[in-house]
Amino acid sequence: MPGIVCDALRNHDLEQAYRDRPPYQRNDYLWWINDAKRDETKERRLAKMLEELRQGQGYMGMKWNS
Image (cartoon, rainbow, N blue to C red; front, side, top):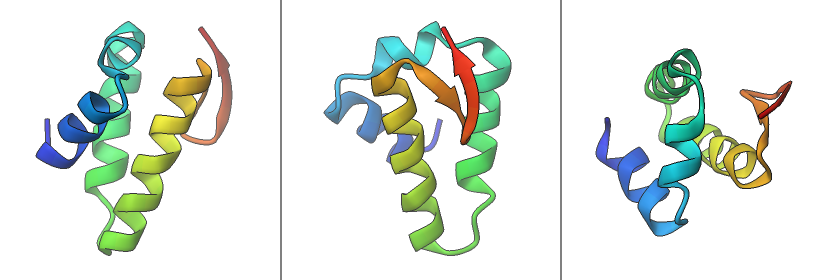
């Protein structure tokens, strides 16, 4: 897991929420964030992931409920 994601999950106390997601979602989040070419895009996607984990719903901007 990239350090930026690991640190963000730890700093926002969302490590368990991330682990509770299905494996395909965890992998997709990492790919989605890392695939961004610009740092601004990576930060925006990371913030979106954190928001969705915090709310317990949503998945890369799509509807999903745990």
